[in-house]
Amino acid sequence: MKPYYFCLIFLLSLFLNSCKKNSELLPTEGYVETSFGKTWYRILGQGDKTPIITLHGGPGVTSIMFEPMKALSEERPIIFYDQLGSGRSYYHEDTSLMRVEVFVEQLHELIEAKNLKDYYIYGSSWGAALALEYYDKHPEGVKALMLANPLVSSTIWAADADTLIMTLPDSIQASIAEAEKTGNFESESFQNATFVFYQNFLMRGDWNGVSEWDTIPEKNNMEIYQYMWGPTEFTALGTLKNFDATGILEKIKVPTLFLVGEYDEARPVTVEKFHKKVEGSVFKIVEDAGHMTLNDNPEQNLEFIRQFISDVEK
Image (cartoon, rainbow, N blue to C red):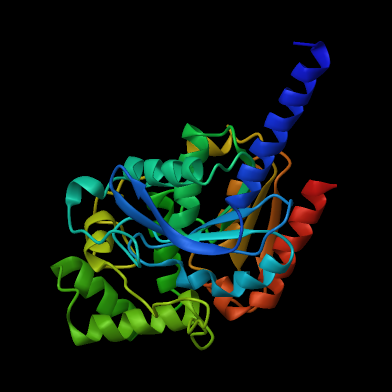
């Protein structure tokens, strides 16, 4: 066989592999069968620009929180998926699957199944913790990290919660203290106090999560949340009690964006300290927003994402 035939065959194989890769990122919805059960995903947008894969919070909630990010699909593929046990993915109450390493492996198997070679990761709250753990185990394809409202350390999270609780009325502080002392998190006074905390530091605006592009409104799995985090927002009492990813921060070698709400329960002063541990990272505060920045001020949240990616791609 003449040498130029080998060249033609080689170029053809590259072309076919490229087509295969691109075809995986056409707008679509479906399931990937992982080692732990079905994982639901949806891809919005298409094109050759680096895709963003989104990691929702919880653990145990769904990707519906990322509904505003559909606007970014006009520029590049955006990949949404529901973590194991929630949303449209495999539902379970199996505590052996409620482990950080299982969520990491689920994401890895999804990425491999969709043939993703280069991608950005956007993780919010618990999703940011998962993004850090994933990067620590599989850094090779991650081209940038966007850590929004991040859980990095459960101990630091609890200290921040204590600081914020001290800004609330005495009656609210007393109700929270009583519940944490007695373990009675079902009392009406504690539920009311939690609602006040949420109004101030979790979601300050009306819920905008009704999504015409999602096929289910909501299917949270509170068994996962209770087992891994616990019955109260303020202190981890579950298996994440000793979670600490601060050591991962100094290992990060890719462009990184830290995003936080002005009134976030992940306090800006704390997140700024995390930012300073990652060389060359960017720190942005979303104005007039609590923990759910994409809900409270989606326009500025998205603008910060666009600006960050634009700088990365320069």
